[in-house]
Image (cartoon, rainbow, N blue to C red; front, side, top):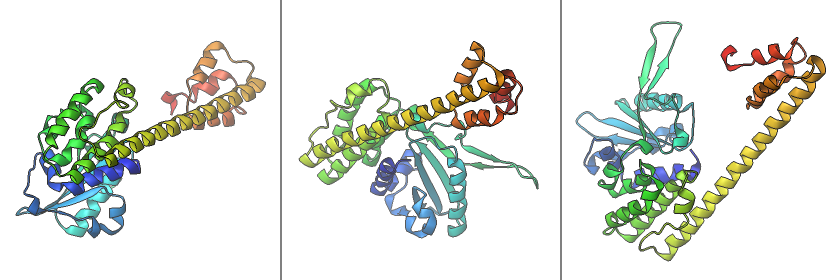
Length: 304
């Protein structure tokens, strides 16, 4: 996760640990809950938030928020889970909250399978929530710390202005510092949807009710930050595309000298390869293959 959304998600848990027990359907009195990050030593620097729940049988809730794709996340959560259980000696429930479609991964499905040469295979089970698949109602009707997550649920860009008005009504009785913190958090998280069709029209004109000058400045800063991130992502994509085009051109140049000119079909096949490492592999093999067909066939996904 980017540090921006990482800090935002953590701050919401700090603001209302009990809100996230409610969100998960395990409502508890706040007096039973303790944030225990400081107990985790090296783990606390990486795990998102850890809550001790003092039920008759105490247990730990480990929350991990993710805004971008990370195929190694379930393995890391397994590491956190094991360390927490070993250090505290009580059961641990690990929950991955995927904040954005960009974080979606078929490998994040609630189970991590493990094969071993010795003994039987085993499975680590965790909970995973995809916010964009959920209704906003539970968030809107729950504790105020959950409100900033509501725009990441299953609502269209056109529904967001009305959703913001509902959030404003829910915050009407909240003290000003807390309300401003929640509005700031909502804006930080809402920009995770910036690339969706229609959001470019919604975000610039989004009205936050009863804003103070400080929050209005934060709104401007948040939009500037989001614009900066978009530019950085575009520039990185452009650089990556440039590297791909350069590597593909080198393959054509080198292989043509040895194998002759490629056919149109072979050029299309080469054009479909968009990984720099695969194209570099073709360069290495171009000196050993007998023809274009052999070069490209051996590099197809089916042969890997």
